Image 1: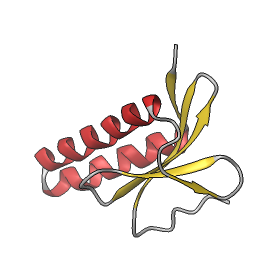
Image 2 (image 1 turned 45 degrees about the vertical axis):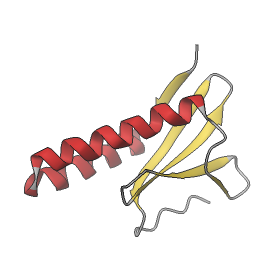
Image 3 (image 1 turned 135 degrees about the vertical axis):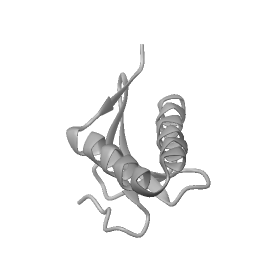
Image 4 (image 1 turned 120 degrees about the vertical axis):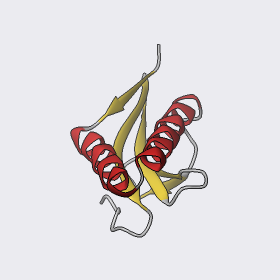
Length: 94
């Protein structure tokens, strides 16, 4: 069985994004959070999607119709979500 493993930093990123958006628009915060979780589900079944970032096996995936990217690493039994960042932020992982 394949699983999605979220790092603590990725969970913090997701919570931070949802909380910031909820201050202005709770409904939009839910839409964004659902889009980010849907992207993770997609990556689980398409673990080679996105562009490589560096030489450590990390890949980035732009979330459809959202200004966010998911940084992840394919693993033998699933994927590891490393970060979820706004595309304009410094998101590079060495």
